[in-house]
Structure formats: C-alpha cells, structure tokens
Length: 85
Image 1 (cartoon, one colour):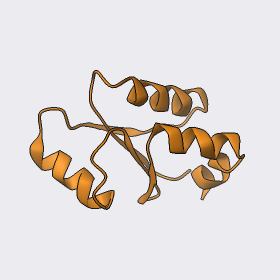
Image 2: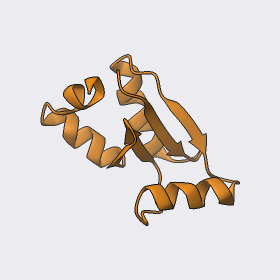
Image 3: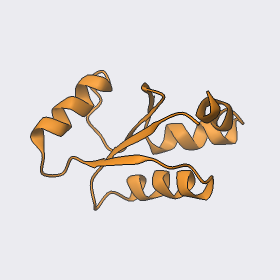
Image 4: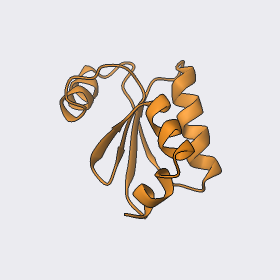
C-alpha cells in the first residue's frame, strides 16, 4: 500500500469527505493540520505546485489534488490501483 498524506484544516468539509473516503477504503493516512502552521502550509503549497486549498492529497509522494480529485479517481476506478502502487 502506498503512503498517503493529506493536508487539512479542522473546519474543512472537503477534508472530512476525503478522509471519509480513505477511511471507508481502509486506507491509513498521515494527516497534517495546516490551519495554524504557516511553515506546513508553505510546504503543502510547494509540494502541490502552488495549490493553496485544502485538502491536498499525496499518494506515494505524488500530488493527486483535493477531495473532488480523489473522488473522481474513485468513480473512474483508478484510486485503488493508485493506492496499491
């Protein structure tokens, strides 16, 4: 299983939806709260090539986007393969 990282804030409904999808699939993930940590937010933006919204999700070190993106991958049947590497 690939390493999954997700940058979030506590009040973000899209973060909740993305985490719910991963949890439903039984995927463990590392969550980083960027709500009050400017250094972590800057790290997220650098890794996400300038994207500043949350969540930002990385699978195997690769940026896959946000909640809409991960749900689209799932609907297209591509998320499970990406998670497995």
